[in-house]
Image (cartoon, rainbow, N blue to C red):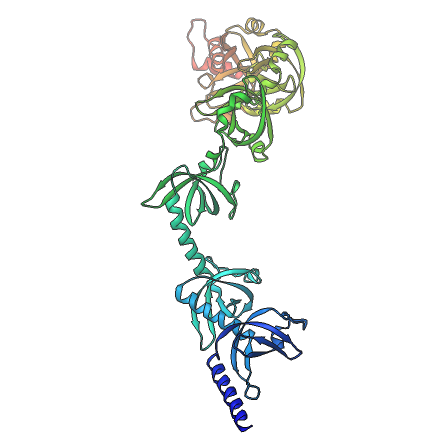
Length: 556
């Protein structure tokens, strides 16, 4: 019995010694029994290992393993009383995670982890063991919104590890930069002119967009974005947008890449004659005012039409082109030319409608008399409404046969906007788009009668009407004026004209000139004075100072 007892004790000791050797090792174990407190595992070492059941309970208290399942365990020690190996599933998982982390750190290989929560200075990441992700290492570009990363499964590089203190620091930025560099190297090997590749819009300048094509940045010039009009890249693209582009130029030494987007679409001008014809109608949106006051119309992307200011309207009352362009109004026009030298259609809006000038000449002829309202009063005449589109001009020279307009104020005092006047049509010029009207022509020209009634040498009385620098305008009768030149006034040197000849003063004068070309009468006050002096002459013809004095006294 003693020998048997000694034999058993030795076997137990031998078994205990062997189990001691495997403490700290990880084994693949098979679940042979699960009780309330323990899990019994076959570790294949002629021994049963025991693990606490709480290690396999889910948040609801249910076991995550069943009899027959296999699981990795870490041998943590020996139960002195039973001689059984003590095991831990949790510690096995953590140890493996640490070993994996150490290997990844040593080799610079990435690890996968799940962002768990925000912590001071960054984020906590689960890579099998807790790891710290500093905020500065979250992304390539600085980011303040860390909440959006919580719950995401991401890749990282381990930048620092301390197994004794249990500290692990990771970097997503480092992983992204390394990945980009790796991708960049591969992309540069593939890049060649003509290559079609997908890229991501990264940013804009006023003259183009930067596009990331596999870790390499290429430039998409604004002129290569669209066949149509593009004032800024943001009109056609968005940051972060994925687009397919073609490599136009590649400089391997400078690693400079020029990209194209519109080149992947057919040039619309190659098929312009299939869609548009001279004499046909087209429409589009007004996009630009030209220097001559015309407009550019975008018919479709890559097809534009120029409508000159002269083709906007049959009359000079053109629409407000600045407002039309600002509102991007739709414009319909007639195609008048397809200019392939500059890839531009030419069009006309006015030719969509009958010419109002043709209509005018059918209704009104030269010599026609009509009554119409004044649309505007200017310094040189008045405009009279003939049709809704056309006004005619009565020039100030055609107001009166005899009355001369010497001051624009006279015109504004004679006529008002909206006033109805009777006129006669003098001339219609559809080419110059002008209609000349007259008022004085409604009555016969009185000048021949005036010339006969006011012959040279006739003595007349006239009222001062206006003082000029070179003389006085006087009124002989209604609408009949005459001019007394400064040299023909009976005035002493230095004497003030306005003081001596107030407006309305009656002057006796003589007709000294009848200007048929200018329809003007020249008068002289001095001529009357001279004749008075001659009338005081003695019979002998000698005139004395006494004679002159007597004659003046008699007149007074």
